[in-house]
View 1 (cartoon, rainbow, N blue to C red):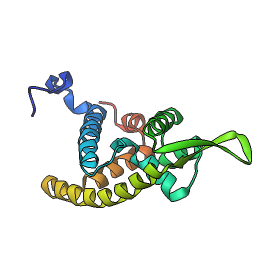
View 2 (tube, rainbow, N blue to C red; view 1 turned 180 degrees about the horizontal axis):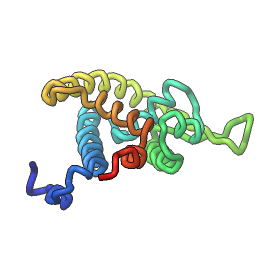
View 3 (cartoon, rainbow, N blue to C red; view 1 turned 120 degrees about the horizontal axis):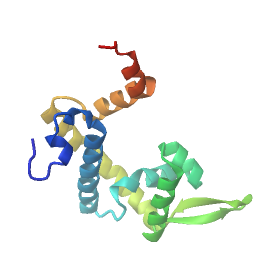
View 4 (cartoon, helix red, strand yellow; view 1 turned 30 degrees about the vertical axis):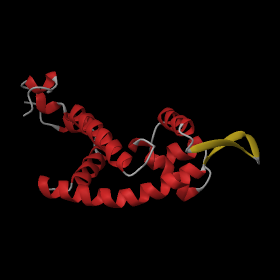
Length: 166
């Protein structure tokens, strides 16, 4: 157990209940290390925005709603990411010629180069995660997906209510 930078809840006798907090810490470290991993390959976009770039690359100009829905993200988070990608000159927002109320995001030339580098670096990331999985003794990605599916099928509250009363 880490001690120097361990969060408060790690010192509690009920620390095993903090699965969500641990998942967020894992997300944070993967995000930070992912930024370094992608930056080393010459990418400008943060690692948490690469799925947005790849979606537009694979699907063409897309609206904010389309991107958010496809990535399973909240609209506000997608809006923040697309604004960041606009600031980095990776995407540009244009009005839809068929509906002036609708705006679509397009990859710029820089965005197209990023998308190509991302695809290449993701193949390398698979090897890195395979190495991590060997070290852990299980497939981290598969375990996370199994946990997500199990909780989508039967919530924490449903599981609690189904327990016999002691």
